[in-house]
Length: 129
Image (tube, rainbow, N blue to C red; front, top):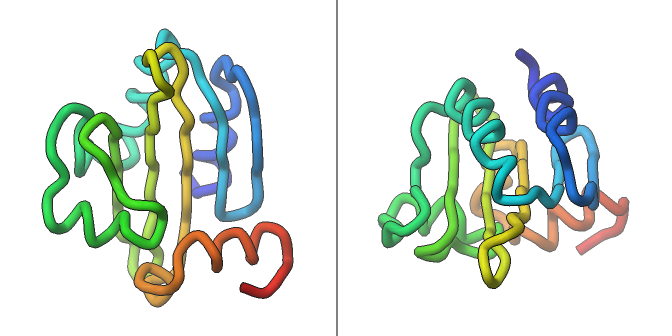
């Protein structure tokens, strides 16, 4: 399954909100009851979460997540590398836990330690950071 097909599979889930989609980024909001379906897709593509919800982030997950806002104990992070491409999925539960923001990112290896969100936002909206 290509990355775009993977994004399409996520978009077929029941979404509360679709915020942004580009060729290398998807941001949606789901209800917690949709999480089981999403987790199945994520596990098939990434294997187990690099940083599961409820666990303190490891040094590796902190390092990988830093350009994208970091990772907290209540959040989940999936990661995989395919050559010089890195794929990330972040699950950020809302206060109260009923909804979850899902961020799916594909980036070049050199982007991983760049300025993170500034570069990502610039690439999404076509501006310069």
